[in-house]
Amino acid sequence: MPAPRPSLANEAAHWHALQRQGGLTPDQQRQFMTWLVTSPAHLREYITVSRVASELSDALRGMAVDLDALIAAGPPAADGNVVALPVRRRPPPPVASRASRRHLPGIAAAAALLLGVGFVGHVAWPQTRHYVAAHGAPRSFALPDHTVVHLNAESELSIRFTSLSRRVELSRGQASFVVAEERRPFAVHAAGLEVRDIGTTFDVSLRREQARIEVAEGSVQIRGDSGQGRLLADLRAGQSAYIDYRDQTVSLRQQHADTMTAWWRRRVVFQDEPLREVAEQFNRLNRVRLQVDDDVAGALRLTGNLRGDDLASLRTFLDQQSSLHTRVVDQRIHVSSRSAAETSEKQR
Image (cartoon, rainbow, N blue to C red; front, side, top):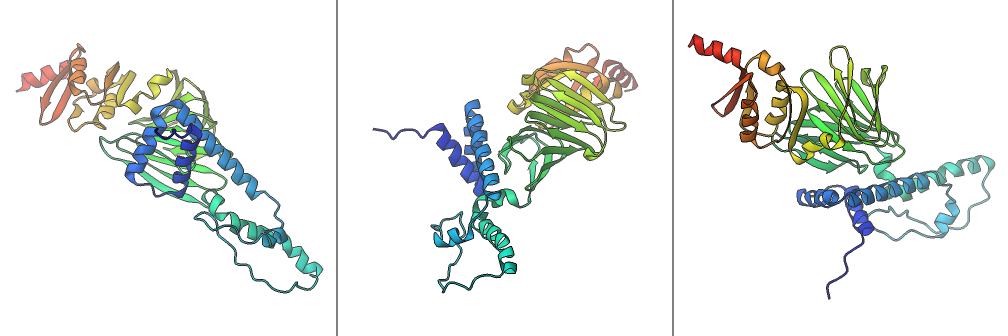
Protein backbone atom coordinates (compact mmCIF):
# COMPACT_ATOMS: atom_id res chain seq x y z
CA MET A 1 0.00 0.00 0.00
CA PRO A 2 1.47 3.43 -0.92
CA ALA A 3 2.54 5.70 1.92
CA PRO A 4 0.03 8.44 2.80
CA ARG A 5 0.72 11.86 1.27
CA PRO A 6 2.03 14.43 3.79
CA SER A 7 -0.45 17.07 4.87
CA LEU A 8 -0.31 20.49 3.21
CA ALA A 9 0.87 22.02 6.48
CA ASN A 10 3.77 19.54 6.64
CA GLU A 11 4.75 20.31 3.06
CA ALA A 12 4.70 24.04 3.77
CA ALA A 13 6.78 23.53 6.92
CA HIS A 14 9.27 21.41 4.95
CA TRP A 15 9.82 24.13 2.33
CA HIS A 16 9.93 26.82 5.02
CA ALA A 17 12.73 24.96 6.81
CA LEU A 18 14.73 24.52 3.59
CA GLN A 19 14.36 28.21 2.71
CA ARG A 20 15.52 29.20 6.21
CA GLN A 21 18.64 27.10 5.87
CA GLY A 22 19.41 28.72 2.51
CA GLY A 23 21.63 27.36 -0.22
CA LEU A 24 18.88 25.61 -2.19
CA THR A 25 20.08 24.02 -5.41
CA PRO A 26 18.53 25.31 -8.66
CA ASP A 27 16.56 22.05 -8.90
CA GLN A 28 15.20 22.45 -5.35
CA GLN A 29 14.27 26.06 -6.07
CA ARG A 30 12.36 24.98 -9.20
CA GLN A 31 10.56 22.28 -7.22
CA PHE A 32 9.64 24.81 -4.53
CA MET A 33 8.23 27.35 -7.01
CA THR A 34 6.28 24.60 -8.82
CA TRP A 35 4.76 23.51 -5.51
CA LEU A 36 4.04 27.13 -4.51
CA VAL A 37 2.10 28.07 -7.65
CA THR A 38 0.22 24.76 -7.97
CA SER A 39 -2.67 26.08 -5.88
CA PRO A 40 -3.59 29.26 -3.94
CA ALA A 41 -3.95 26.96 -0.92
CA HIS A 42 -0.22 26.19 -1.08
CA LEU A 43 0.68 29.89 -1.02
CA ARG A 44 -1.73 30.58 1.86
CA GLU A 45 -0.35 27.66 3.90
CA TYR A 46 3.24 28.71 3.26
CA ILE A 47 2.55 32.30 4.36
CA THR A 48 0.76 30.97 7.48
CA VAL A 49 3.77 28.84 8.45
CA SER A 50 6.05 31.83 7.85
CA ARG A 51 3.90 34.08 10.03
CA VAL A 52 3.79 31.56 12.89
CA ALA A 53 7.59 31.17 12.76
CA SER A 54 8.04 34.94 12.78
CA GLU A 55 5.72 35.37 15.76
CA LEU A 56 7.53 32.60 17.64
CA SER A 57 10.83 34.35 16.91
CA ASP A 58 9.44 37.60 18.34
CA ALA A 59 8.21 35.76 21.42
CA LEU A 60 11.62 34.16 22.02
CA ARG A 61 13.41 37.47 21.63
CA GLY A 62 11.15 39.12 24.19
CA MET A 63 11.08 36.22 26.65
CA ALA A 64 12.43 36.71 30.19
CA VAL A 65 15.04 33.97 30.73
CA ASP A 66 15.96 32.35 34.05
CA LEU A 67 19.72 31.66 33.65
CA ASP A 68 19.84 29.31 36.67
CA ALA A 69 17.04 27.23 35.18
CA LEU A 70 18.81 27.08 31.83
CA ILE A 71 22.02 25.81 33.44
CA ALA A 72 20.19 23.34 35.70
CA ALA A 73 18.45 21.87 32.65
CA GLY A 74 21.80 21.08 31.04
CA PRO A 75 22.74 21.65 27.41
CA PRO A 76 20.05 21.06 24.79
CA ALA A 77 20.27 18.17 22.36
CA ALA A 78 22.69 19.13 19.62
CA ASP A 79 21.37 19.65 16.15
CA GLY A 80 22.09 21.87 13.20
CA ASN A 81 20.06 24.81 14.50
CA VAL A 82 21.08 25.01 18.19
CA VAL A 83 24.33 26.20 19.72
CA ALA A 84 24.99 24.29 22.94
CA LEU A 85 26.65 26.21 25.77
CA PRO A 86 29.50 24.40 27.56
CA VAL A 87 28.62 23.90 31.25
CA ARG A 88 31.35 23.46 33.85
CA ARG A 89 30.39 21.94 37.21
CA ARG A 90 31.89 23.83 40.12
CA PRO A 91 31.09 24.56 43.77
CA PRO A 92 28.34 27.10 44.39
CA PRO A 93 29.79 30.62 44.24
CA PRO A 94 29.60 32.99 47.18
CA VAL A 95 26.56 35.18 47.53
CA ALA A 96 26.75 37.80 44.81
CA SER A 97 27.14 41.40 45.67
CA ARG A 98 24.49 43.91 44.72
CA ALA A 99 26.69 45.14 41.87
CA SER A 100 27.13 41.67 40.41
CA ARG A 101 23.41 40.90 40.78
CA ARG A 102 22.67 43.96 38.67
CA HIS A 103 24.53 42.33 35.76
CA LEU A 104 22.64 39.03 35.92
CA PRO A 105 19.77 40.13 33.63
CA GLY A 106 22.31 41.07 30.96
CA ILE A 107 24.11 37.74 31.32
CA ALA A 108 20.81 35.88 31.09
CA ALA A 109 19.85 37.81 27.97
CA ALA A 110 23.20 36.97 26.38
CA ALA A 111 22.74 33.28 27.18
CA ALA A 112 19.24 33.34 25.72
CA LEU A 113 20.59 34.94 22.56
CA LEU A 114 23.26 32.27 22.16
CA LEU A 115 20.76 29.47 22.73
CA GLY A 116 18.30 30.92 20.27
CA VAL A 117 20.72 32.09 17.60
CA GLY A 118 20.06 29.10 15.37
CA PHE A 119 16.34 29.83 15.37
CA VAL A 120 16.07 33.62 15.30
CA GLY A 121 19.41 34.56 13.78
CA HIS A 122 17.95 34.64 10.29
CA VAL A 123 15.73 37.59 11.24
CA ALA A 124 18.04 39.26 13.78
CA TRP A 125 20.94 40.10 11.43
CA PRO A 126 21.01 42.11 8.22
CA GLN A 127 20.56 40.04 5.07
CA THR A 128 21.55 41.37 1.66
CA ARG A 129 20.98 39.58 -1.63
CA HIS A 130 20.97 40.42 -5.32
CA TYR A 131 18.70 38.96 -8.01
CA VAL A 132 18.89 39.25 -11.81
CA ALA A 133 16.61 37.96 -14.57
CA ALA A 134 18.34 37.77 -17.96
CA HIS A 135 16.88 38.60 -21.37
CA GLY A 136 14.07 36.18 -22.24
CA ALA A 137 14.18 34.53 -18.80
CA PRO A 138 11.69 35.87 -16.24
CA ARG A 139 11.92 34.03 -12.93
CA SER A 140 10.09 33.56 -9.62
CA PHE A 141 11.60 33.00 -6.19
CA ALA A 142 11.03 33.46 -2.45
CA LEU A 143 12.83 36.07 -0.36
CA PRO A 144 14.18 35.22 3.14
CA ASP A 145 10.90 36.42 4.70
CA HIS A 146 8.95 34.13 2.29
CA THR A 147 7.65 36.99 0.17
CA VAL A 148 7.22 35.62 -3.36
CA VAL A 149 8.77 37.70 -6.17
CA HIS A 150 8.04 37.48 -9.88
CA LEU A 151 10.98 39.18 -11.65
CA ASN A 152 10.48 39.99 -15.31
CA ALA A 153 13.17 39.45 -17.95
CA GLU A 154 15.88 42.14 -18.14
CA SER A 155 15.18 43.12 -14.53
CA GLU A 156 17.31 43.46 -11.41
CA LEU A 157 16.73 44.01 -7.71
CA SER A 158 18.57 43.91 -4.38
CA ILE A 159 17.28 43.40 -0.84
CA ARG A 160 18.42 44.41 2.63
CA PHE A 161 16.46 42.84 5.48
CA THR A 162 17.13 43.70 9.13
CA SER A 163 15.29 42.88 12.34
CA LEU A 164 13.33 46.14 11.91
CA SER A 165 12.73 46.51 8.17
CA ARG A 166 12.53 44.84 4.76
CA ARG A 167 13.89 47.03 1.94
CA VAL A 168 13.97 46.18 -1.77
CA GLU A 169 15.78 48.21 -4.46
CA LEU A 170 14.46 47.68 -8.00
CA SER A 171 17.21 49.10 -10.21
CA ARG A 172 15.67 48.19 -13.59
CA GLY A 173 12.81 46.32 -15.16
CA GLN A 174 9.68 44.97 -13.50
CA ALA A 175 8.81 42.92 -10.42
CA SER A 176 5.67 41.76 -8.65
CA PHE A 177 5.58 41.06 -4.91
CA VAL A 178 3.25 38.72 -2.99
CA VAL A 179 4.26 40.07 0.39
CA ALA A 180 4.51 37.77 3.42
CA GLU A 181 2.65 39.27 6.33
CA GLU A 182 4.73 40.11 9.40
CA ARG A 183 5.53 43.03 11.71
CA ARG A 184 8.51 44.42 9.79
CA PRO A 185 7.49 47.01 7.15
CA PHE A 186 8.11 46.06 3.53
CA ALA A 187 9.11 48.81 1.09
CA VAL A 188 10.26 48.86 -2.54
CA HIS A 189 12.51 51.72 -3.69
CA ALA A 190 12.66 52.50 -7.40
CA ALA A 191 13.44 55.62 -9.45
CA GLY A 192 13.33 57.88 -6.40
CA LEU A 193 10.00 56.47 -5.18
CA GLU A 194 9.13 54.42 -2.13
CA VAL A 195 6.26 51.94 -2.44
CA ARG A 196 5.25 50.88 1.05
CA ASP A 197 3.24 47.68 1.34
CA ILE A 198 0.21 47.39 3.59
CA GLY A 199 -0.34 43.61 3.27
CA THR A 200 -0.73 43.16 -0.44
CA THR A 201 0.22 41.88 -3.89
CA PHE A 202 1.58 44.64 -6.10
CA ASP A 203 3.70 45.30 -9.18
CA VAL A 204 6.40 47.90 -9.91
CA SER A 205 7.51 48.54 -13.49
CA LEU A 206 10.22 51.01 -14.54
CA ARG A 207 9.33 52.20 -18.02
CA ARG A 208 10.88 54.62 -20.47
CA GLU A 209 9.42 57.85 -19.06
CA GLN A 210 7.48 56.82 -15.98
CA ALA A 211 7.10 54.26 -13.22
CA ARG A 212 3.93 52.18 -13.07
CA ILE A 213 2.69 50.75 -9.76
CA GLU A 214 -0.29 48.37 -9.79
CA VAL A 215 -2.11 46.77 -6.84
CA ALA A 216 -3.78 43.38 -7.31
CA GLU A 217 -4.66 42.86 -3.64
CA GLY A 218 -4.51 44.98 -0.48
CA SER A 219 -3.08 48.51 -0.65
CA VAL A 220 0.16 50.47 -0.95
CA GLN A 221 1.33 54.00 -0.27
CA ILE A 222 3.73 55.75 -2.66
CA ARG A 223 6.00 58.58 -1.55
CA GLY A 224 8.55 60.66 -3.44
CA ASP A 225 12.19 61.40 -2.57
CA SER A 226 12.86 57.77 -1.64
CA GLY A 227 10.22 57.84 1.08
CA GLN A 228 11.11 61.22 2.56
CA GLY A 229 8.82 63.26 0.30
CA ARG A 230 5.10 63.84 0.05
CA LEU A 231 2.48 61.15 -0.34
CA LEU A 232 1.94 60.73 -4.08
CA ALA A 233 -0.72 58.03 -4.10
CA ASP A 234 -2.65 55.71 -1.80
CA LEU A 235 -3.64 52.76 -3.98
CA ARG A 236 -6.21 50.04 -3.36
CA ALA A 237 -6.79 46.75 -5.17
CA GLY A 238 -7.56 47.28 -8.85
CA GLN A 239 -5.80 50.65 -9.06
CA SER A 240 -2.69 51.68 -10.98
CA ALA A 241 -0.51 54.78 -10.68
CA TYR A 242 1.66 56.12 -13.52
CA ILE A 243 4.29 58.50 -12.08
CA ASP A 244 6.40 60.71 -14.33
CA TYR A 245 10.14 60.64 -13.64
CA ARG A 246 10.65 64.36 -14.26
CA ASP A 247 8.11 66.01 -11.95
CA GLN A 248 6.42 63.01 -10.25
CA THR A 249 3.00 63.91 -11.60
CA VAL A 250 0.56 61.06 -10.98
CA SER A 251 -2.09 59.55 -13.24
CA LEU A 252 -4.47 56.99 -11.71
CA ARG A 253 -6.31 54.22 -13.54
CA GLN A 254 -8.63 51.32 -12.72
CA GLN A 255 -7.41 47.91 -13.87
CA HIS A 256 -8.48 44.29 -13.41
CA ALA A 257 -6.20 42.21 -11.16
CA ASP A 258 -5.87 39.46 -13.81
CA THR A 259 -4.50 42.02 -16.25
CA MET A 260 -1.88 43.13 -13.74
CA THR A 261 -0.50 39.62 -13.27
CA ALA A 262 -0.86 38.39 -16.87
CA TRP A 263 2.87 38.80 -17.52
CA TRP A 264 3.58 36.06 -14.94
CA ARG A 265 2.16 33.73 -17.62
CA ARG A 266 4.23 35.41 -20.39
CA ARG A 267 1.31 37.37 -21.78
CA VAL A 268 1.73 40.98 -22.82
CA VAL A 269 -1.40 42.98 -21.98
CA PHE A 270 -1.54 46.66 -22.92
CA GLN A 271 -4.40 49.11 -22.53
CA ASP A 272 -4.14 52.46 -24.29
CA GLU A 273 -0.33 52.33 -24.15
CA PRO A 274 2.11 53.86 -26.67
CA LEU A 275 3.69 51.44 -29.14
CA ARG A 276 7.23 52.21 -27.90
CA GLU A 277 6.23 50.89 -24.44
CA VAL A 278 4.60 47.80 -25.96
CA ALA A 279 7.75 47.12 -27.98
CA GLU A 280 9.89 47.12 -24.82
CA GLN A 281 7.66 44.49 -23.22
CA PHE A 282 8.01 42.14 -26.21
CA ASN A 283 11.73 42.81 -26.59
CA ARG A 284 12.41 41.53 -23.07
CA LEU A 285 11.26 38.08 -24.11
CA ASN A 286 12.38 37.58 -27.71
CA ARG A 287 15.56 37.45 -29.79
CA VAL A 288 13.74 38.93 -32.77
CA ARG A 289 13.26 42.52 -31.70
CA LEU A 290 10.51 44.98 -32.46
CA GLN A 291 12.06 48.26 -33.61
CA VAL A 292 9.96 51.44 -33.81
CA ASP A 293 11.45 53.64 -36.53
CA ASP A 294 9.71 57.00 -36.02
CA ASP A 295 8.11 59.06 -33.25
CA VAL A 296 4.66 59.09 -34.84
CA ALA A 297 4.50 55.29 -34.77
CA GLY A 298 6.04 55.16 -31.28
CA ALA A 299 3.36 57.47 -29.86
CA LEU A 300 0.42 55.50 -31.30
CA ARG A 301 -1.64 54.17 -28.39
CA LEU A 302 -2.78 50.56 -28.61
CA THR A 303 -4.83 48.01 -26.66
CA GLY A 304 -4.27 44.26 -26.91
CA ASN A 305 -3.61 40.93 -25.18
CA LEU A 306 -1.00 38.66 -26.83
CA ARG A 307 1.41 35.89 -25.93
CA GLY A 308 4.81 37.40 -25.31
CA ASP A 309 6.57 34.83 -27.53
CA ASP A 310 4.04 34.88 -30.39
CA LEU A 311 5.69 37.34 -32.79
CA ALA A 312 3.58 36.18 -35.74
CA SER A 313 0.40 37.27 -33.94
CA LEU A 314 2.09 40.50 -32.93
CA ARG A 315 2.97 41.35 -36.53
CA THR A 316 -0.57 40.49 -37.68
CA PHE A 317 -1.94 42.77 -34.94
CA LEU A 318 0.34 45.63 -36.06
CA ASP A 319 -0.52 45.16 -39.73
CA GLN A 320 -4.19 45.57 -38.80
CA GLN A 321 -3.47 49.13 -37.65
CA SER A 322 -4.24 51.33 -40.63
CA SER A 323 -1.61 53.92 -39.69
CA LEU A 324 1.30 51.44 -39.33
CA HIS A 325 3.63 49.67 -41.75
CA THR A 326 5.85 46.67 -40.83
CA ARG A 327 8.76 44.91 -42.50
CA VAL A 328 11.30 42.30 -41.33
CA VAL A 329 15.00 43.04 -41.81
CA ASP A 330 17.96 41.26 -40.14
CA GLN A 331 16.01 39.58 -37.33
CA ARG A 332 14.10 42.77 -36.55
CA ILE A 333 10.47 43.71 -37.09
CA HIS A 334 10.64 47.35 -38.17
CA VAL A 335 7.48 49.36 -37.47
CA SER A 336 6.88 52.83 -38.87
CA SER A 337 3.99 55.12 -39.56
CA ARG A 338 2.59 54.74 -43.07
CA SER A 339 3.36 58.38 -43.82
CA ALA A 340 7.03 57.88 -42.87
CA ALA A 341 7.18 54.62 -44.85
CA GLU A 342 5.74 56.30 -47.96
CA THR A 343 8.21 59.18 -47.66
CA SER A 344 11.10 56.74 -47.35
CA GLU A 345 9.88 54.78 -50.39
CA LYS A 346 9.73 57.93 -52.54
CA GLN A 347 13.29 58.84 -51.56
CA ARG A 348 14.68 55.50 -52.80
